[in-house]
Image 1 (cartoon, helix red, strand yellow):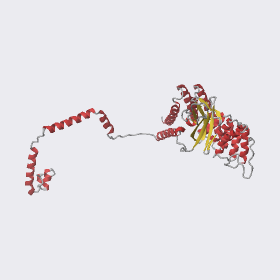
Image 2: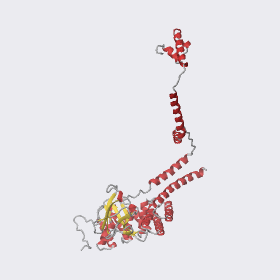
Image 3: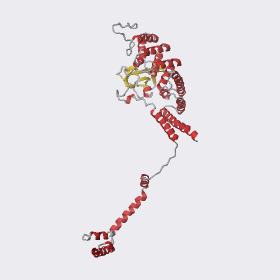
Image 4: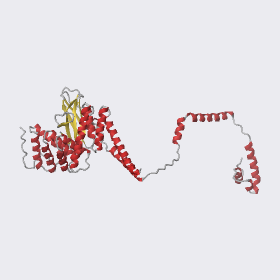
Length: 221
Length: 225
């Protein structure tokens, strides 16, 4: 309906110009346009009852979900960005002392001895600075034999030996880090036995521990 | 306020760090020892840490005792005895001129003391253990030789002789095994060590003690039939 109006008349209808600002030759057209639009604005608009019902239902649903979902509200509250101004007043030495304390704690954490590898779970031959060491014990009649030592936190179940047939010889091969280790065999889960083929030292409990020295060239018993 | 602020902050930091170490010890001992033994071991470990001693050997010894089913009071006694040896070893290593020894060196010194070496002998061995010789290694080798029955003076001379002859660290680690081989052939530990010491004097660096120069006959093994 307004497609035929002059652009200046359209600006008049948009409220960007007043009637007085129009050129004289366009004022009649402007007055006519205002009259027509004014009549349209005043015409009553009747909404269908179905539309009103749908709108009100949507409003009620939004209101009920807004009050019911406390979690959503809490999340929105937590998630809404806010401007926070934090002002610290510190002396330089407190910063340095705190940094030193944190560094000491970090050094302590990083300096902790790494857990000893459990030989049974390590990929054989894949450990750096580790050497495969074969443990052998002649224990005829034994039902279970394991080797426990400083390399596996003295865990009696970590490194079981396997019987070689029915000869009474039990063996296992473990990847041990280079260095000297103390160990003993555990027969049937309870009896601690030193390795007859290795040096032994006092264990501090009135018994003996066997010693194995692992070098990059192999184990030295 | 400012005067007490710096020490207070440092003390808090050290306390925090010490608390972490104590938690570590507790975690490792948990479910292995009774609460009473755990508390006693933690106390010994905390005291050792305060004196700059390594804590890991103490925890290892407690774990070993628990694994072997040793009564709690004997575990505590063994851990306490080890802490005492670590303290003596620390002093001996410092006497050798190492101001801040590494934990494994102190542990090696404690092993040597346990094997019958004196503090002076530990100091002497640390003093000659210059790179590439790790004092932790030389101390442990000497301790193992002594455990095999080699008299401490002779064990010390053998290790020091190997070092002065320029043998490799791996050769040093092989000494206990060679002494055992000699003993298996019928020699006493002292005789076996003496034979190795004699051989060590002539072999060039990197060679095994029983190495014979080209063109010379290998001495006949007197223990071999």
